Image (tube, rainbow, N blue to C red; front, side, top):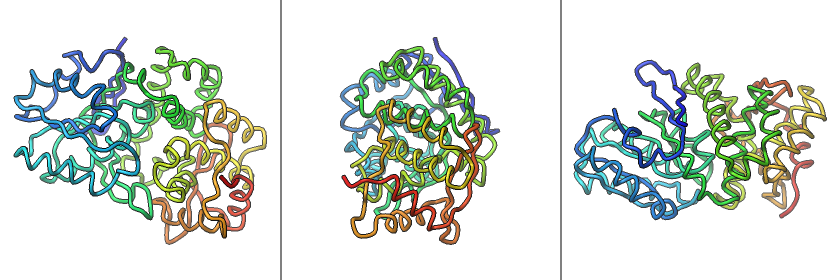
Amino acid sequence: MQQTVQIALDERSYPIVIGAGLLGSPSTWQGLPKAHAALIVTNTTVDPLYGAQLAAALAPIYPQVHRVVLPDGEAFKTWESLNLIFDALLGHGCDRKTVLFALGGGVVGDMTGFAAASYMRGVPFVQVPTTLLAQVDSSVGGKTAINHPLGKNMIGAFYQPVRVVCDLDTLKTVPERELSAGLAEVIKYGPIADMAFLDWIEANLDALRARDPQALAHAIRRSCEIKADVVGQDEREAGLRAILNFGHTFGHAIEAGMGYGAWLHGEAVGGGMVMAARLSQALGLCDEAFVQRLHGVVSRAGLPTVAPVIDAADNAGRYLALMRLDKKSEAGDIKFVLVNGQGQAQMRGAPDALVRQVIDACCVAA
């Protein structure tokens, strides 16, 4: 059964379509911007699975359907990969009406969106996320970016897609580790916005990990509803939207410190949520029982609950240095998304000495 969640952004509003069998259904692609050409951006893992299917579905709509296949992995979320998209657009003589289709996970979606925002100063694009993480988070809301060696997603743009298509069938081919990584972004919505949803996640974690279609459909829809509400109020992360980064300040430091790709993004967020909850407790915002509850949910999802040591000489110092490069930092002051254990979040700073204690308590050497 097909479901739709609407992102309300006035003239930039768009639907998130959720259901099974969407890739091959002609109705999925009706009403998109008219153009002479479409460019599918995908990667070496996803292209053999779904590239030809999407190209065939778009062929009746667009006279020319091109494809560019990028290397797979967070380590390739770079200028070099971004230029492969521009090479394809220019090489095929694509004009400013050309529609881009991001077929893949969060890396493909972020880079395709950035390319669409930049090419001829903006062309339309469609998100076709094929991982759970992308379907519940990165494909929604218009954040596009590439990584820099000193920081994750530091170079990019806010640029909204014209549609998001979440085909549940694509989750059948997601590796177990990637599925767990996606669950991290599902879990985060409970502590920041909806504790009843966290209750549901706890009760349905086994079904989610077993890829039960009804459980996945509900998790994706509710996650997108929460994100749609937040993005509708704060599209460019001037305030409220920052709460969606629960666990991400610590998590991005883990990714940068370990080297992009060593831990999946969702794995780093899982460990980062435990650290953020522990910091919330240290500041008196939540109790030990909530920290233990979140720790248990993260663990049951198949995610790390212990953060890695990223610098043997001064681990906490390295974390602090990397977190000062986070986009939420202001004048070198680190801002954390903290929770109260009742479905509410806030963004605030914390003394370095206290953060060091939390890092020391949460980290072990690999």
